[in-house]
Image (cartoon, rainbow, N blue to C red; front, side, top):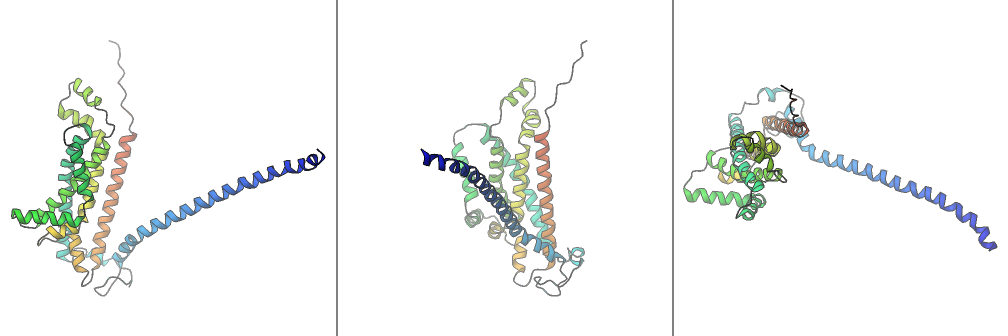
Length: 300
């Protein structure tokens, strides 16, 4: 008993200090982990953004040779002479035109397919889902070669039209999947209530369905535009004599890429960022918009 009394107080004081030191260690480890995670995130972002920053910077390079890979001074002349190379300007116009047209076609058709998948149950629905995901997951070489075989078999000359068909084909799957995902958990009773109040099919779609799925439709359209404007492999198989911006740049790498390419790529990048920002703001505004309150009625 005496031995227990002698060592009792000492053993009672140790756990308090040990608990305090043990409490500081997890905090330090947590802080170190947070700092490491933040630093790692910024390094990854810098690694991803570095090529874009280099592309933008060399659009202002005062190069004296065909190779635009050595910094020789700052200038704005390439921005003033952005259309000095007619073939490059034509290729950029082709890319923008094909991207806009394929975006419109894929948005309309993909939205209808996505609404069918998200709202209805029908025979072959699982097979259609499998087909859409197979189109996305298939290698671009396979898609390009299969489309080339199809056009040759049907006797369709390769050119602007075949590029547009190819781009619209693979963009439809992306838009359909985005829209069908947006319709997950969609309340069909809203449409039924609109029809009970006298709205026709078109009015119900315009006033009820479209506002609900608009963020998904807009996201799918922007994704289709981005995928089309920089598509290279499928375009190579089906381009014929038509040049797009990626095809022209690839051909120019053999002799030297002019600074106008950096300028045009910068314009495309800034335009894409602005479109993505507008889409994000529009989607956030629709989600944050409060429901309309019933107008107060006054007794007669």
